[in-house]
Length: 352
Image (cartoon, rainbow, N blue to C red; front, side, top):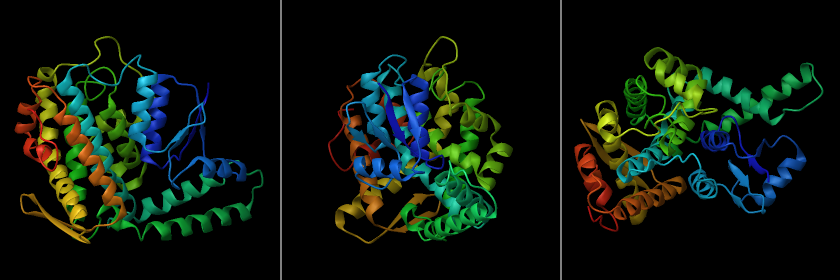
């Protein structure tokens, strides 16, 4: 039974899902919309014009990367990507949430909107144009001209979409520093292990690698990673086709704490303050939001359609925390990261 996976090499969520299919060795075919027939098939099943789109053998289809992986994990439980320890499982889910909702800012900003993104935007636009035209049998100057025109059109469209990730003159230094801090703290952690929680990948690995692999393949962000975070760069490459390493599975928190805690303390409060403020702005119907992120950093951005999805996903991660039983140790970890109250707010209260 073959799954049909529509995606794009430049989509972090597509790469996230494809890596999961490969890790689980689930029979699938990778498809890009490079023909009228495939475009028609995509349009038939897709509710939104975005990738990934996974068509299941029974004809059902899904487009949200996290629910896709959750459903497949229930169907293919062997070699689980979820730690058995409840606290570590929640941390994995929280890191994936961080990757999907905050990490996407790194990729989009550094690819399109930073002061040094010009070469990356040009290069990436041509890659996507070539992907769309892949399979063409005619060559010559005409094809090159068509790629150049398609690339220019795509680049022009994307350069007007910085508002979707909150990229602007005020937030640019915050996004760029967050990227550098993350890859370097992750580098120290990955210097001792193959994956974030040990010898096999978790949901956190798939989520973070989806975003960071895009940075790795771009010019400016990729150079920064290779120079400042070589272990992170190697991990990004490995996560394209991840394989468990030896026996032992997942480590304990005591084993992970020394190098994982600094990453959590550095980035999770930043992300959750933004996410909480965003959810409140959406609920109040505001068109603009502003929030202090700490250390004198002020985040300001417009509030639109994409921000409603961020609010929904925050509600879900808060719900997951509220379901954890007492005694897991997660409250102590989140308190040390200055995250517990942010995750308890705005909805169901955790029993922790």
